[in-house]
Image (cartoon, rainbow, N blue to C red; front, side):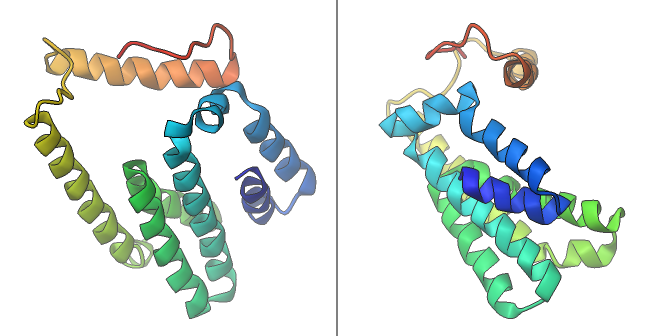
Length: 178
């Protein structure tokens, strides 16, 4: 995955040094220890591999406009979604890449992403249905006594927590409640 990060950032920046520093930080950052060390986190490694591979193929597709790259992106994206539901954000990453190159969002750039959004919505619905079914099979996925405001605060806290830990990775723990 770190090698894929290197190639993606090399394609984006055209600079070996920027790509090398980014890939090195990605490889050695302490927040990645959990994904590498725990066998139950192999889904993160698989999802990342397919997600990053699809991004790299998309960059090649943007440059060469060959159908083999387009179909590779779709297949790798589906494999990423099958690995972990977090992959549904992939179309947004494609939009950001287009924005980086074109510096604007257009209707054409959105139309090109419709197949990716369809795949994302399909996998999101499947994931929500699976979690809903599990919550009624005796496995509780809910946080007890958490209202809508509590849930918003959990999301906000986690967002800032991971940004802070990415910059200053101190006092990391193997278990974070909620």
